[in-house]
Image (tube, rainbow, N blue to C red; front, top):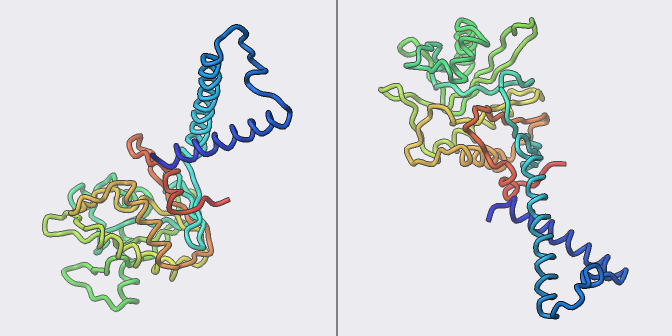
Length: 283
């Protein structure tokens, strides 16, 4: 039984109990509202029980529908000391410093072989940034970390964050935090396991804490793109759970709004209310 149904049953029971208490106080009962004269007492009991059960069932359905509609597209949790909002949308249209997963060499070759044009990495290079600016940001961060260039590229450790600032189409400044989430193998495929994914996220949260400068942070559902999980655990609900849990266990407090944006592609539907079992809802 999922959390939404459990809470709907509990709320409906509480409402029903409250109504029954009021009926008792005012001396009202179902039998006084619906006397059913001439009907055998045993049959009357069955009718009254059926009426109460039907009313309770309808109330459960109404409450469940209300909960489903309210938390269909957005929900906010208290994760440690952080308030995290999870909602559907487009990360590039969401204000804040945007976290973009990239490979460990931060490739700017977007040809659907190394980097997909449809990935956030590809869209950053082609539509929301520029390849030369990204290369300069990578070079500066590599120098700061003491990472030497090998075979024409710098390889960052998993979880490392490379800040990148770019002038937006409206003339304003847009800030991105490119996080090294995947290491491409010899076949240019991104493989990982859930254990490695968790460790990478832990490093990412520490890196974000180091550079965010109290700016709002916007993240995608990291790992939901082309990353291949060798242990078959990379489904969207598990990824979101892991993102929230690693923030919680990292004990990092970000003095800013944190938003996880789920791209609304009509396919990825997450039961957001079910995460209430892990974290309490923010008010």
